[in-house]
Image (cartoon, rainbow, N blue to C red; front, side):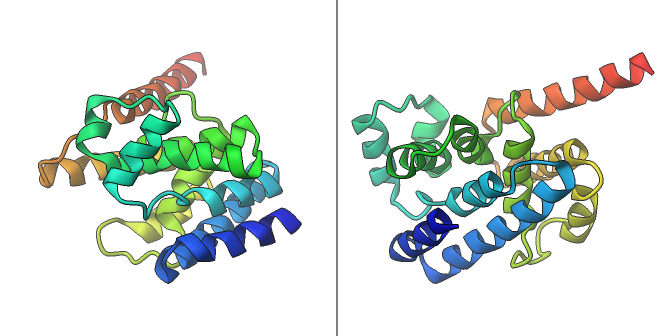
Length: 196
C-alpha cells in the first residue's frame, strides 16, 4: 500500500490533473479485472497507476530518453514518438520503483501491444481504454466494459480492431506489433475451437 501512495504523490508532480485522474481510473479498473481473472491485485494496481508515467513528456524528450537509456526504437516510433511512452514508462517504473518484469511488460505493451501479452498486460491494455472516466465518444465503451468482465482476449481483439479502424480513417501509421498481437489472439481462438 505504501508504494502505491508514494507513486500517487510522484504522479501528481509529473502528470496533468486530467492524466492523473485517468491513471487512478485505470488503477481501479485493473483492480476490478484482476479480481475477476485471478491476477495479483497489488501488481495490477501498480501497473495501472504507472502506465502513463511518461505520457506527457514531449516527443523530443521521449526520443532523448530512449537514446540516453539505450531503449531500442523502430522507424514508426521515430515518426510517432508518442507511442514510446509505454517503453519509457516501463523503464522509469523499473529504475525508480524496482517493479517486476511482469509489471514492466504490462506498462510497455499498453501502447503497441505484444503477441506475448500475459493476463496482467491484457488487463492494463483494456483498463486504459475502458476506465470509468473515459467517455463513449469514439468507441463502444459500454459494450467493451461488459465484455471485459467475461472474455479478456475477446475484449483485446475488439479494442485492437476499433483502434485499427480509427487509425486507417485518420490515415495514420499502424505499428506492425498490433497486427501481430491481433493475429496471435485470433489464431489461439481458432486453435482452441479446432480442439473442441
